Structure formats: structure tokens, C-alpha cells
Length: 124
Image (cartoon, rainbow, N blue to C red):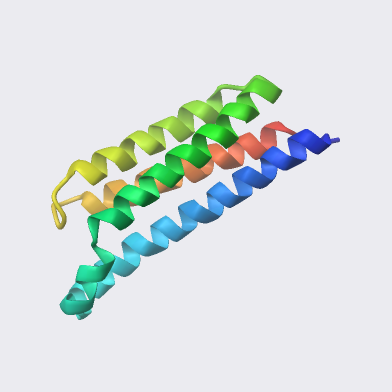
């Protein structure tokens, strides 16, 4: 049975998974917007959105996954989440529109979300 403390951290994983989903949606929406409305796409492609999103992902990931590892002792969620963050950071270093940029971003987001899901399940 999850404790009150464990429950609080699984909520952080839920928020982080939600943020990952929003990031994936943003990446896909940007690709569609670039193809359909190039004037509107400039707003979605603003570097501050991507950089700010990565900072939020790192902060939430570090807090939720780090506290989870400390509580349940499993390092797999941290390793999977860190791999996802690394891929996301690598995708951010590519020029906008570079081949694979969106694919790497979405792959990183999915791995990070999977790491958070593993973290939530580790409490059970």
C-alpha cells in the first residue's frame, strides 16, 4: 500500500507524464503547423519554448525520479528517464528542421514518460 509520501511523489510522476505528453503534442503540432501555416509556426518554434520545456522536464524529472529512487531504491526509472532527457537535449542542439529533429524529440519525450511510469509502478 503506498504511503502518503509515496503518493505525493507518484503525483509528480503523473504531472511529468502529462508534461511529456504536452511536449510530444507540441512537437507534432509544430511539424503540422510548419507544413500548413509557416507564418504561425514561427511562434511555436521559438527557442524559448523548447529551452523552457527542457528545463521544466529536467527539474520535474530530477525531483520525481530522484525522490522515487531514494524511496524505492530502483535505478531503472532514473536511467530510462535520464536517457530520454539526454535525447531531448540532443534534439534541441540540432538546427530547426534538421532531419530527425522531431523524431529525436518525440523519442526522448516517450522515454522520459516511460521512466516516470516505471517510477510510479515501483511504488506498488
